[in-house]
Length: 234
Ligand code: ATP
Image (cartoon, rainbow, N blue to C red; front, side, top):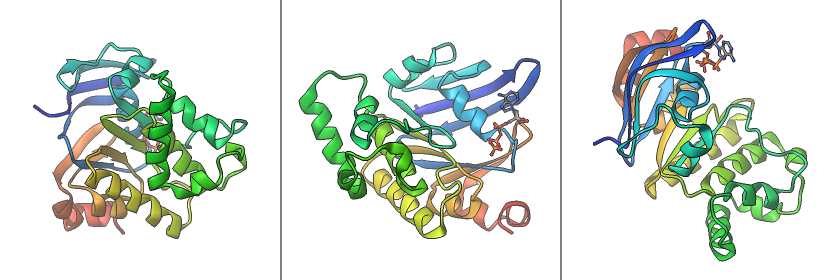
């Protein structure tokens, strides 16, 4: 059984059908990248998984049916969504942002331990604990957004465009941390415009176009696929 499985999923914004019956799987321990141009439906796929958009079709996570769960229930089931544009709380400190990520537990000791684990990946956050989220650099805010998601000890991380607007060297750091998290067992579904880097760290990938899945394959094979090279890696 796959950790996450979408079967013929459709998603709607009012009358607009943004997903036209997509099927995909993420196995435990994988990094799966979802690539495709603007408007292909990548973000909508993540929103569908965590119940933020109207859907039809089947979404199963860890054996249970997720298709009609409200968003906070998705979080309680172990799905952490780091949305596009990060959305940290700008007027709260780094520490407060992280604590909010652990909303599902009241155990202070556990929260402290989780925070130490986050600092192991993102030492910069420890140095900036008292700083307002909104005053940090884009890269630091992305680290905080991922750190906050880790505070809920999820079973899967859904990352939406973590590289957006960041300098290449910071993007590299973020991608390295994603790989490190994965090496230590975290399953990741990664949405990226930056197809080359996203496929380089992934095990498998899906290429989306206008609400459909155009191609799926091992990441290495997608990287050398002529169609992919021409459309997304140029
Ligand atoms: P991007 O990288 O630009 O976010 P994407 O592949 O993630 O691209 P989506 O954001 O999932 O694409 O959008 C898929 C389609 O749904 C697009 O046609 C988009 O215009 C439409 N769409 C997205 N959000 C909304 C919304 N809130 N209301 C109406 N239509 C929307």
